[in-house]
Image (tube, rainbow, N blue to C red; front, side, top):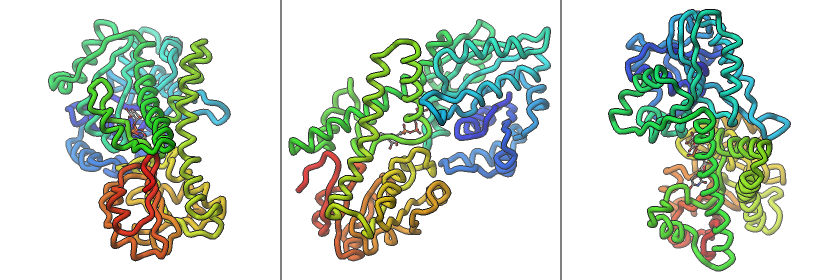
Length: 437
Ligand code: UDX
């Protein structure tokens, strides 16, 4: 099989398929990425992936190339795992990479094959790709395109790929369904449910899942605002809500909101597509979800300004966290860096520390100050912001840190610090949706 695209999704999928026993060629247009992966180096931080890459490369079942033609010629199943970033000028998804990869696969087929779309796309894309395949495939060859969305989370990508919560197969024939059931035989045997459906439903499952998760986060963030105004505590409230199995505790952590390469762009793309389809209520709901989310960043900036007496000009601000969430070095649309950059623009001297995302953050925001430890970020700070809930930040000893600054003041923007413990250690503690004293 081939896997087109070797980013988070493609690299993980290629390695996972090789782990399941298949011969896999990962294809990318980026020579540097291909060289790194072929040499056993994962070009991003993803727990467990380097070990599994090394193991599967050693079996000889996995290789990487930029030579699409030769990769396609030898394979029966081709996965499309390329990115669908937000367009520069609108909320719509940029489908150029998906179209290019699909066309290249179809053009180079030398035998009947199944083309499996995994990328996150606006509903209706797969039907158009089918036309593209029909127009590009050599005469006499049968190429079937189906949709099999991927739900992996960064930081848990390997486990999510090998043990998916569900396997969605959209637009399959009897033949291609049998092929896909053979591909996923191991997770299916372990109990992963298979949902067989049409192309548009399969495309929509993915974006609706992300939209629901985003809505859950914005819901609790909106309620956090009510908690603050009413003197209630959103962390206790979320725990109590979560005991209701119909609600569940996950994705009810109030705070700085969602970022990363998926949730923000996916809800905007769904908003855009819903409007195109005339489904204006969905678009309006998602607009609110997005606005509440972006408002959380403004709220934390305001809290920092307030903590510094109205202006952060020449104030020292320590920032713990740059990644959009823990267990990744991804800073795409990172709320943490967004806040840090905004405070820097207002004249603050910002020192950011992140255990894994320091390098990616520096590349994205070279003008910010960076430290190499928690202590460096805290030292002499007028206010300390905890913007990504890495375990090592949650477990830090506030007593020891209090000695590093004459103004021990902390804003917990992720709701994971113990307010009591920090206050007992002498810190002035503020959190989103938390009691003030
Ligand atoms: C998400 C989906 O979870 C995954 O299924 C899909 O395939 C890709 O998009 P990911 O982008 O890796 O995965 O991140 P996720 O773990 O979903 O977190 C997204 C953001 O929400 C992070 O910024 C996180 O900090 C934030 N978040 C999450 C909250 O603010 N509160 C929560 O309770 C949970």
